[in-house]
Picture 1 (cartoon, one colour):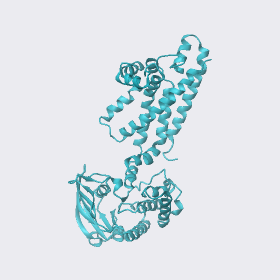
Picture 2 (cartoon, rainbow over the protein chains, first blue to last red; picture 1 turned 90 degrees about the vertical axis):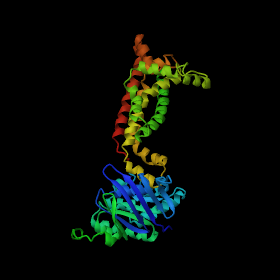
Picture 3 (spheres, one colour; picture 1 turned 180 degrees about the vertical axis):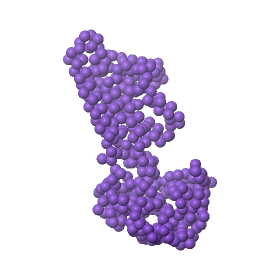
Length: 234
Length: 220
């Protein structure tokens, strides 16, 4: 199992802002924290390879995923990472199990893929929706299936883009703990985008504070993300 | 009563729909992804057959595919027959009518697929082709099918371009719409009536199904 650090240095000009960030994601959970419009999603998409930066370098250990100077740009499908989108992006025409199977390496035998998908759905406590399509899921079930899909493919890096933001607080923390447990097991770099302080402090080891496309602070999560006063009372 | 023109019409329509579907889907996918330089102009050229007079289209086909054209000569060298005034010409004429309908419907259907789903497929290890085949295509299927049906209905009834390019040779290129014209001109209305009825029923049925399909949710 990999226990390498993801290093990110990238610049990307957007119509409203220029994102220029350099940071590292060691194995464990790093929180990418900041207000909306700060460049968090763009950063995640660039790491995943679905947005091409203007310049920079993204590497996992000594494997280069992107390097503008050396003209390296590993296509998204070959980066072996998982991105959980804010909208979850579950395939509406596939069942939960088929969604999870979709991401598992196709060199693995079909029966083994089905088996692995079923196990992961069980682990995420959504075995009961395995043969149903996403339109029938509750919000929490959809989140869990999306997490199952992300982890079942044994990724080298996991990226979560406000994956729990639509959930109520209880569920958000519960899913946060699930992610925490998976990451502790797999020992892989995980980058979680959120603007909820409590969620950040609960799930994260480290945090990177991003504002207006720049890194403002980086360090242990409790140093970077201030304790939530209002959120706790809510 | 000679029903062979009706049979020929269906043969031509099936072949033309097949060609228009394969070609149209490729064109629609390229246009939907913005991969065609000058895409809007290209789109205009592809859809022009819907508004151009058949005589103009027929002229272009004769120039482009006639016996003196490069394509026409190559085709003749390989197959031994010409494109124009043969069954191939009739299929080509019908394809030109069907293609814009397939392209327009397929493009709209493909552009309607949430791009995040395609990105998700890519991050889950799917090549662009696999993402297209397993995500975009199935989710666009109702719209594409509606376009294919419309294309079929359109190619079943082509008249002008077929007449110019394939002629009106009984038993060879005389489709139902041409045979109906001949019969009415010769005051043999009774010969035309059954074909008129069949073409009308098929057209209405196909349009009805296409309408139903285009209203289907993307996921059954």
